[in-house]
Length: 271
Image (cartoon, one colour):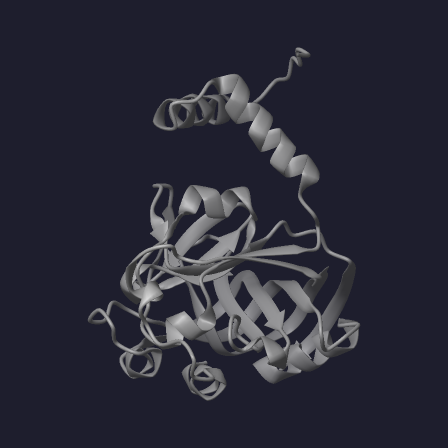
């Protein structure tokens, strides 16, 4: 075995030792696995926990640890157990938006999320945005096919953002019922980032078709699922995704829930 001497931040060293103890494995094995995962990871790969159909039908129990989610991506979207808020993954951190925003540093079970290691393929500017649809139209020409997936990051100062956040519902409640009780809020003159995933129409059984935007402010205090927004000038980056890795729950209600119904209509209404 080769020896490799590197310098890392003290906080990362502490976290690595703690994780090594938690997983009952050597520090050498842990660091080796992390390096191998990073070096072999594809810049075109999406990693997803569970499916959109399961979400629509009320399967909200966590199944995969958040630490594993972050091993597979640093940028993405999702939700929390029991629909306890909107999940925003940005720059390798998980944030929970419930009206206010908090960073989740604990290791918890995730019911549904999609992430990628964000590496843009193109960068472009969007000027004088009056509505969210104009951002979508500006992104459309940069998608090379309707049959691939895309990750899109949009940074800038927003004149206004109208957002919402789901909140905990009784176990088994369908997504449409949960959407009726969601919280809505407005932010004015706020700098921040839109975290977006775009999925093809054919993917409705496992993903959320079309553009799916979440917002988080630069100071990480405001965020949620974006319903509308406006801005003067934005910087957008887009990444092509052609590999899709879905991890299905191996226990709980996912195994017994009827997932045969097409969720496209319900997804569109919930969005």
